[in-house]
Length: 421
Image 1 (tube, rainbow, N blue to C red):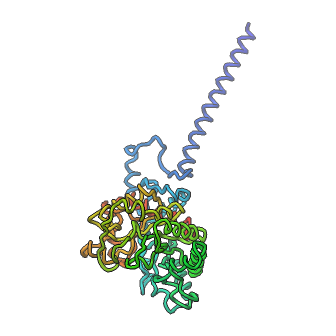
Image 2 (cartoon, rainbow, N blue to C red; image 1 turned 120 degrees about the vertical axis):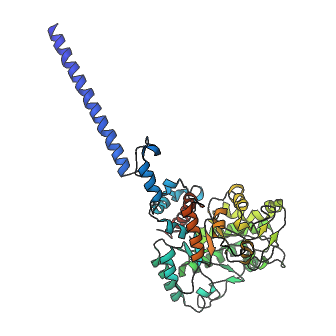
């Protein structure tokens, strides 16, 4: 009996010791896990307090985040999602290292300045430059490459370097015989020469030429449906009905994507028979059903094919918003996002065009365009537009979350294209 008691006592001691050791090891494991999570966050988590902590528990940390010059994408709650979701983590990693000034700069593609282009990059960190015929005229391929490489070398965040090389009447690059043996033909001419196969070949040649010079984004294809030669947009359009234009857009987008050349569907929601918005206001009085059965179809085909960007026109489309140009209309952007399901980057047509000037009456349109839903603002003006948006974010009339959402899309698109390696 005594032996049994002794053995029972020893067993109890061993059990107690084992339980104590397990508790100690469990505590050490938990502590080390929290420590590692704070020091080396996983799956995009940010260093900070344990998940159980509330904002009220950490008032100093909250204040420090709000005043820091570089803001975290996750701190603002911004998310990419959609077509760029694969690149979201990489884009957030870039965003977290950016200052507010750098983030504001990313939403602008400025017309490349005729002088002081490098200084502008240093001062404003623009998301890109839009190159006009002037930037290619009279230059050799070597000179163009050298200039564009200098732009990229000067920029902390690699830039979009874009142009309009549509073919036909809009040929910024191939209009220079030193850069191309002849001008690219219009989409109508190309199709007549060999159907959709010729369209694919022509698009591939354009993409190859642009990439060889350092251009990474072509502002094409033109998705506007126009069959009347009297219409302003006809010469730049495919010149056929909505279904045939949709097929043209699908082939074009697939070819640009295969070549890793950025492209932009333009000009949403479709010019139709309206006038030239470069010079004056233009109103479109057609019914919404007309857009649903015709003008939207090429855009929908391009979106389905994986188009990363849509450019919005300055036409006032009365069935969607009777007061504002489409580029400045939240209603038009809601249709693009919610009805057509587009999750990529939305860009304005140039905000220096006459239709915007007529509406804005001397006021800078940058903030209104951004609040309407655009991610990228295309404009020649640098200082006043940049300052207007920067001050709007700083004062809170544009939330930093809203800014981060656009910047994340832009960064993700650059990563997808290989602009950012």
